[in-house]
Image (cartoon, rainbow over all chains, first blue to last red; front, top):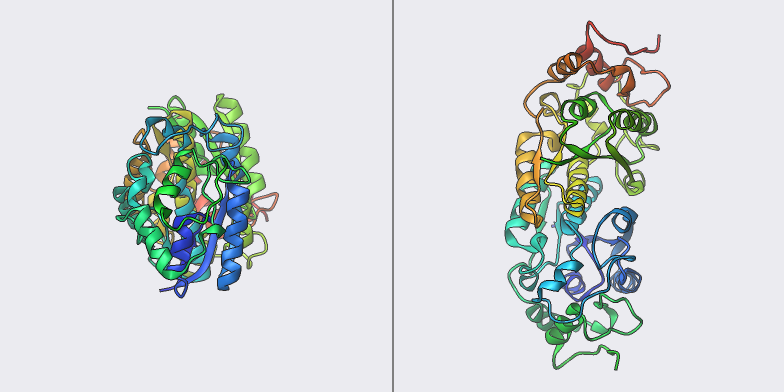
Length: 213
Length: 213
């Protein structure tokens, strides 16, 4: 298998990059105008450089301009608290995984690769409809039917937790200080937003992250 | 129903715009670097203006930069002959409909609309995998599962021909001189490329198009 990875530079997709590095021919990151994009993308580039994986950054300015989400620049304030809280719904960027998978599928077809990979995981299901297995299965069927080469969608972490992913990464010796999660996009992780709370829980016992006091 | 239309400014989607104008709250066009984009988009804007439909143009420069297709600026020459010919395959822009539908789905969710519409038709099936009913059905399931509001994908022309579409447009009194089809992107339609041949056949008997001599 030779795949395109949808690669944010966060904990989950960085683990996928390292775990499947021999199958990943291309990593693609998207700059969709989120508050934390710049920091994520710098780490994404650095991890690709270290592994010798070709890396593209695709700008999607229209999301910041036309889409509604507190995650985007100009949107509402990022809410604090755990992911399970209803107010985290404001951080949803509508159909983001659908858009990123569709573009990655077009790239796979253009470069003669046979799969796209996504690091969605079980903990995302409650809030994000475009992280759930039903979505992934239907999108995989669409990508397969809509490409000449029958490109596949592979999401190896779809039914495990972020903690499971981090434990796998620890075994692989991944340096998680080279990943970024905080939705607020500050120099240090805030430690309070939903994604920081999730990150802390996932990395408990081996967390190299410097959080704000 | 209130829908987002994927709107190229060509014959098919212009007919859909006029036929479903009371249900279309937003028309979205994509500037993906094709040789004929500028001419199509000018007509798209003009038809939306006449009908009072809100119109967005979303640039997708990455397609011109990274995707392989003779349809794109910098690609190979556009082949001549009918659509059925194997060489028209070079005009495929990989997974284009998947990408456009995914972005339209995110817009529908952002604007509180409940459907996205696409003017793919039966004559496209032979060459373009992302125009076939299997693709549309799977993509509809993905969009439905991946959005909070269960956005629908509607493609009313999926099983009729371009000729059927044009006949419908004639009944509606559509001025087809305000549409553009030619893949070569010249001031006049070339009359020889696959899409011009198809256009001629569809409009036979009431074709207002001025073709090159």
